Image 1 (cartoon, protein in one colour):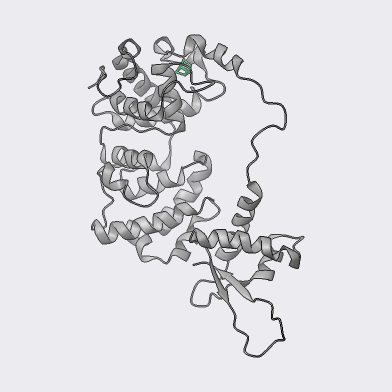
Image 2 (cartoon, protein in one colour):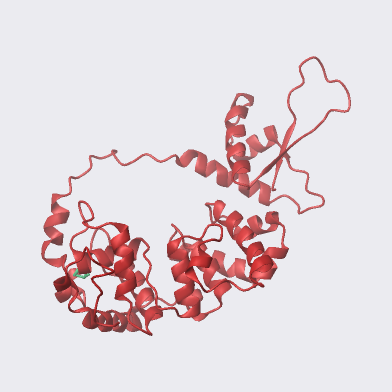
Length: 334
Ligand code: SF4
């Protein structure tokens, strides 16, 4: 359906906004052919490698993901390899990539794929979405980048480009919902060129149509863009946040979750793995750790255990150590 949109699908977006679709498709695909980034997962159509790359790329920068991807794929080149491995090995191979819930889900997904799908990552988006940790974006990306399906999906960059191009300025608030943008993403795909189009949208959003400083003056599709006439004015109307008023994130515990996991990954693999006593773990992750910090550390470890990333074992004393024995907890990978 190159060059046309179906109002039945994108009923919130008036037709005149979409009338240049074929020209936009050609221009963006041509831009990608010249400026697209050379990334390791773009040299393969292996569904497993595509899936690993898409899971890794969630909420982290591409450059940061590359060495982790290469190391992980070397260790687990097939879905079977990950399915056969203990979760502790998978967590070790995930390295310092962070957001460890993803590797727990990927490990579960690998086992489901082996057990229920003959070891082949499904091609169907609806089936992919039934797997742990796979949402609409990842399902669409695997279907498109591995199997060549003409489908659309939106990540942060794609959402922004599609909104500006076909709808209008996305600040201070988006004009349409994600539901509309997803439908738009599907309808905008040029038949038979979905791989180039979707990869191109990503790179275009990362390098040209950026969130804060879109390079509209050098944009090859600027003449078709709904947002260009007003985007500067719209950005100027965004109230400047006073210094120090940025949202506060709970980075402290996230940091220490990573520190704890780094210590657990450094432990010898099973069967000799015995874990680290909780007080010792505290001194390993914080130079200023004191016994009164144990409840805090327990909270960090409990959070990891709840996410399936750590296990807590309790030593049972072989003799009576006194009227009020302190708990002797050890922490290890699951
Ligand atoms: S003209 Fe500007 S806002 Fe519009 S697509 Fe190009 S870079 Fe993005």
